[in-house]
Length: 289
View 1 (cartoon, one colour):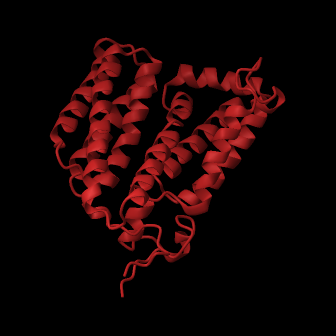
View 2 (cartoon, helix red, strand yellow):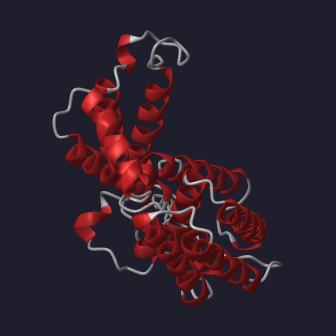
View 3 (spheres, rainbow, N blue to C red):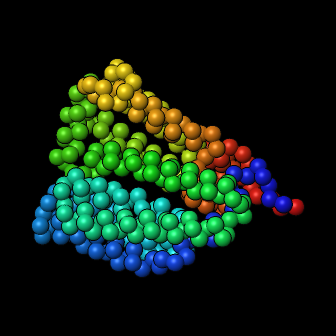
């Protein structure tokens, strides 16, 4: 029988879309990459370092989608989705119409592939009924909240020199003398949250780190001084920060669960035993008797 102590009891090798092929995503990513080149050099709306961000990240997404996703759909999906979303966000910051339009098409394809994957998985899962649906519910919410951090760190470390200078001044206004260094540190922390929570990598550790980061960041943002309601003046109360803190901290309980890098690493025994406690709360090897 299956070891019920294991959080990750089903095989990830069967988790892949059933009806939608991958080639439309490849084509759309190639078009999006071309749109970023056009918006960077032909109709230059994307400036300086942001050009490298958009073109490079979309190219990376395309490479992963072609060479990783067909072999390991869940890993390829997560690894390619994050750089794509960053590029999309940078294009939006700089009002690149062609970049945003092509990226919207790409994102719709990612969503359709994910829905197809969830639907197809109901045939293969080795745990049944409500448990399977709850695993996918958690995965969906986890990916959204993790990748939601893209909206915060993209403008700090990927959107070019003007955006970085603006954020440095904002951080000086928070009382931090080294605004530029603080922007880099904050951006890297937020990127780590996107990887740890959104991709589900060392997720229990990431949950604790993300909660602490939000606690510190919102102290400097002075949200805790404005009462509870988020729309309180001048900067908003602690309603939203506390929601994020509780949500991120909750992953310290049991980890990412289904459709995560942790699950893939543990299933293939590619994660050192000493690190597994940072992924799941119980021994993760499956055993049958």
